Structures are given as C-alpha cells and as structure tokens.
Length: 72
Image (cartoon, rainbow, N blue to C red; front, side, top):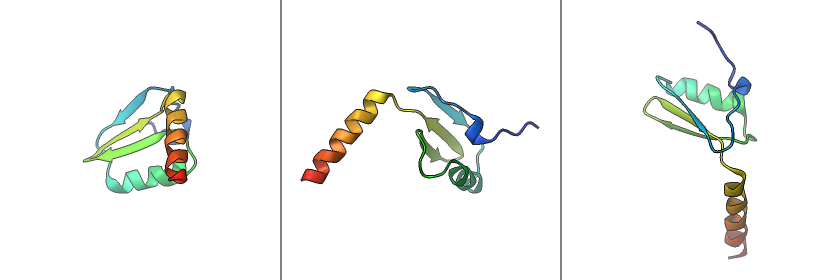
C-alpha cells in the first residue's frame, strides 16, 4: 500500500477530490494534519471525504458577505 500525506495533494481551484471508506478517526487525523489555515474546504459524510478548492471569485463573495454581516 502506498501512503500519501494529505499536504502532498494539490487540488486545483474549482475542483474536488473524493475519498471513500474513511473512518471518523481518520477524518479527525486528516483535519489535524491539514491544520486550520488551509485554502481548501473539507466535508465528511458517512465514510466519504471530499476536499474542495473554491474558485477565487467565490472567496471574494465570501469576504463581501462576511463584511456585510459584521456591519449589521
């Protein structure tokens, strides 16, 4: 079996990668390895892990909406 560290995987903007048969414990280990400050989004549901890299224009929208919420 080949082992790859998650920090070695690069997800191009606008793309995602699915991993199957991931346990909750593995998911928590992956989160620890990637850390809090990452450019990807991670979702986990019933053994399926999805790592997504949002497009830059989505990040601009996120910041704009966040700023509007802060103002309110």
